[in-house]
Image (cartoon, rainbow, N blue to C red; front, side):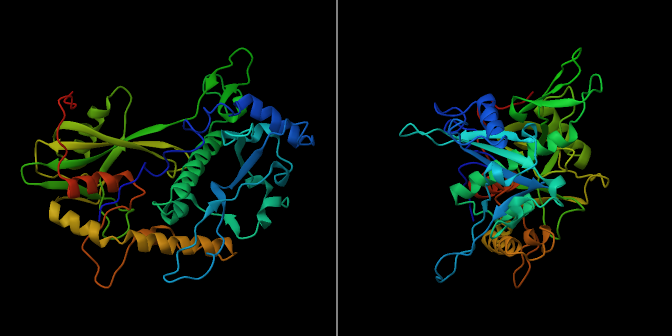
Length: 401
């Protein structure tokens, strides 16, 4: 099964592209912040310049989502589709305006309409204060990984909402961890509508920007024997295999990181390195709120595997046919449907279900020996493009540095 996406999950954010913050009617962060401050201070819409503001609340890293039941019953019944639960600022009382984080603006292209400004805010501290958005019908705070698996990758609107939620979570988690200046230790204060911070010490005023942690992820290919190197970590669900990956160290190039990580984890020496694509990944640990996965094909110069057991549980060469079977077996639509139903139940007030990892462990009557991550992960597209479309042709400018 070959799944082609317009963009990777968490990419193609509609608030950040040419149709978003760069449109002629888009609000600047400072103008949007002034309008929001006026609304929070009790000014009417006219006094606030008729500015539209929509707020996405988060609680402990989870966005507020809604999942109404599907309309009329049909056969087969479509899974319920989740959407982000945007609220007006009046539904988020008691939060200072400088805590809101500007995500971008969208719309307002015709009839002189003004673009709407979109914000995110962490309401974790309002749990006992009667947060007004908590009673929104068919809505709940849902883990972003669960929403990721539940999103229909064929639905452009759903993927756009996922990208917005990922961007918002990355910024909010960065705000929660970057509270002090790394140069002098003074308190860091939000500026430019929360899109960056600045040291509050007048003698320092160091500018502080959102953190991005670059990670190389690579499919190592044995071209002569038509095989690919896949690995398992102990945290993986049973039978799931994926690409090698690792953080880039200071002072090394992307290509050097690919070769170093492959050698350290498997003892395989890599020669040619070919870029594939990249994906923002805002569902890592809170201390690394937004990783950037940079994907490569890497061509092996040696074949003997020596697994670093501190990093990996196992690593093996897999034939193209075995990888094709793994892609066929992984019934991603079934996993997406079950996750969408789980989100719907959570939004109806049911207790949170089991860990999202259970949704990734795709089962059938006869379990296959292996499967690979779903279409929401760049690893899936590295693996499937090699297995189903053949080894990439090396351009004249491939990296051999």
